[in-house]
Amino acid sequence: MLDNLISNACKYTLSGGEVSLVLTANRQKANITVKDTGIGIPKKDRKYLFKEVFRAENAQSSQEKGSGFGLLQVHRIVKSMQGKLSYQSEENKGTSFTITLARSFETRDTSPRSLTDPLKPKISVPISAPLRTRTLAEDNELNKDCILIVEDNDALRYYLKHTFSPDYKVVDVANGEEAIVNLG
View 1 (tube, rainbow, N blue to C red):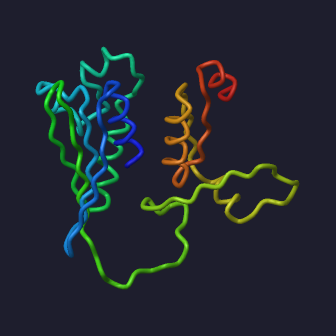
View 2: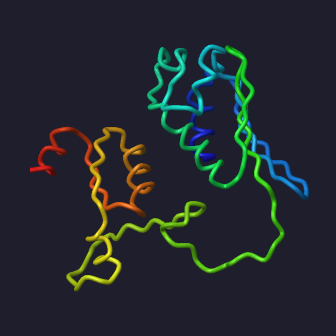
View 3: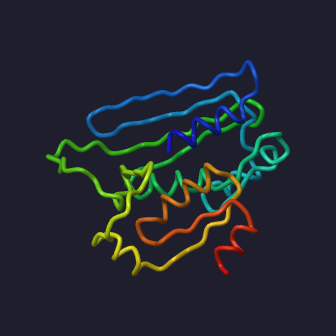
């Protein structure tokens, strides 16, 4: 979540501008605010921010690459944590996004989290894989539905793969040519 918000703030703030991260908390809630002095979000585009994959007109006309998918995902993750994502923006003056999460002082399960835990996924990629027999987890992987992700942006493709991998067997490729090879 923070990676996306900070990345966007840096991406859409001109040289000499400012990006800040502010953390505040009380006994009931914690707030994480990412604020910038960037291009801001035009009023006419604000209604689309959390509804679909969307990039504001001024973001599209900037030289910065983006898919419009990240902010939608941040919103979904915050919502899944029973939190709130809010923002304030003024075109050509900047934007601030605030994540508000309820604090809980209950005893929590401290056991290691699994790949299916959306709050703190563990991702491990083997450097080399020696020959071995399949494990029970790998057998379960064979029974999953398979999806193909075709995306030329490496960071977005990696994010999508790890977002969907708990529920699907994921094949990811960087272009249509590779996709055809994988389908054949």
